[in-house]
Image (cartoon, one colour):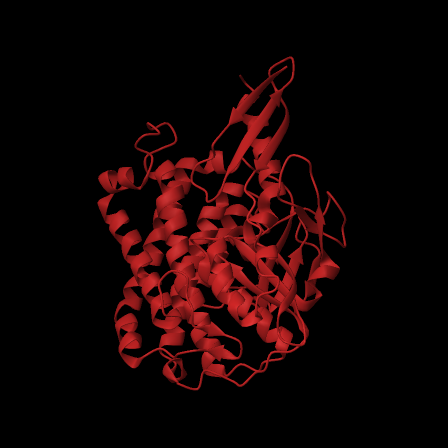
Length: 420
């Protein structure tokens, strides 16, 4: 009996480690993913005026802070019964897409691509974005450009490129200027082309690594994502579960999430293990994020991304259960985010100044859901008569995936140790 410990884990935000216990024959007998960070924001916001919370919770994450800002303000809107002007909804959605473009480009090109472009056998010291710049400078330039434009979208609508501040109950505190709209429009077609180039790169890498993609981290789980009229949707409308074989679907609205999501407590991690309450634990463990979003939707909402989704399904099946296929799914979403951003930038209402409805603090309970770059994000607040937060529940994107990440690591370890 032996044990392998991998710590600290790299290329993620926060702290964690993996332990693999080996049996007497040297095969993996048990795998644990330990998440040891404690953030405590559900307690930090208690006693605060609810309108302040959308400016507090972005500090939960340095990468997907915009998603927390918007899920939070949507929760306050719901608690206080705010009716959001159409122009404000569109500008909030554009803010969200800017973060999605920035974060998906970061996640693929900076965190995943080094292993593919440089190869898994390359020296770990060069398997990073600097190594990608040396080996494929044109790829790196496109990644940097997409991150810059995504951040510019967030700044134009959110007031700041990181930790936006404009989302307020009832809408936005400021609208986007025509000058900023024109600057973004001038670059968006190039970003769409870069999105297509990224997919072409991934498809060429698939040819080289398809055996690995189809053997490591291949697990059957449920999938949870957001759809609108059955189509893939970043900003949120209806939640949809799809079963491991794709034969069963369950749909519900954000306010009904406690009827569908359970949380199981384990001893080795601070993170709770969410599961599909209608199925039970552990059979109802599920995945979120790009792979889940592509698996649960009937189609993408934009044309080029829809063509890419069909090709993805032909390559990996439907639903796809290969964990490494998350990378190609992410690039489909990156392309879709660029296409949808162009639609919004060409809409005259995107620079309308009618972006705030009157709303008064009051007692209520509201749920806000958006699709954050790593998965579905829930914020739920209860307020008293003065609009002060008395109770908060947040299920952040990566939390959903922790138990299935552990399951995927177990499967990968069994494959890797099989012949050793």
